[in-house]
Image 1 (cartoon, rainbow, N blue to C red):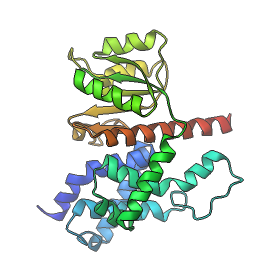
Image 2: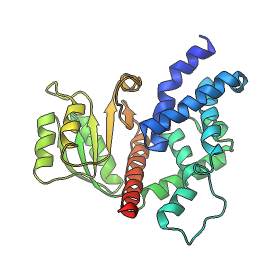
Image 3: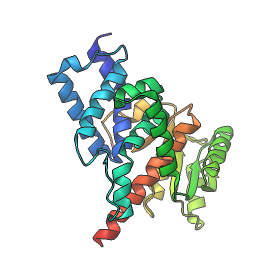
Image 4: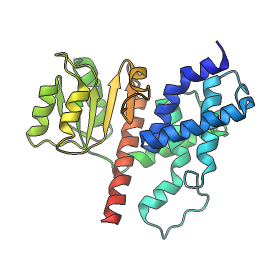
Length: 267
């Protein structure tokens, strides 16, 4: 397989990572496009290791961290609002957390991507977990038709300090739970549901009356990362690892809180 073919093979996962890092499909894809432009102009940037995927993510990371707004601040200004200080101190830990927990890179590969050693990767992941877990407990609606998976998700999110307001197996059940006054702060949704209905349709119905972050869970993530349609900002592949779910929940709530702060300042 050629290098170009390998890049194409890994591109959906780079787009997922970029989206989780930026909190936006448009912004994430812009960084991915810049990465591809760099590869065209500097093809030697690939092939520095035997892992093309890690090389691809390393090039993306170089571009992302080259912008001061995304980078790590060595000196935090304590007179700034808390949300601004958070933005200053968390980018690198957040990258390590996503690379390890969402994208499944080994500590060694994550170190190559971030240009740090394994011990530093571990420290960054621990730091991100502590920071992103703070003050983010919320009500969660689970839309999942497989009982064992639903039970695993329920136990996982409750272990993170969240409260599950209901588990829906179908589109109708999801709408019923939300209509009973149980407004979630986050939705975890499978794509294919028990009665043949769609988790996408259920979520679209719910978002007509309120706005919350949504994390889709599917066995076929590549079908929803084609660039040909509006795509989920947060996507987890089945079978999932608990750390993956934890990482994405933290990211989704982080971006929601950041957006609300921006709205409050502009009001």
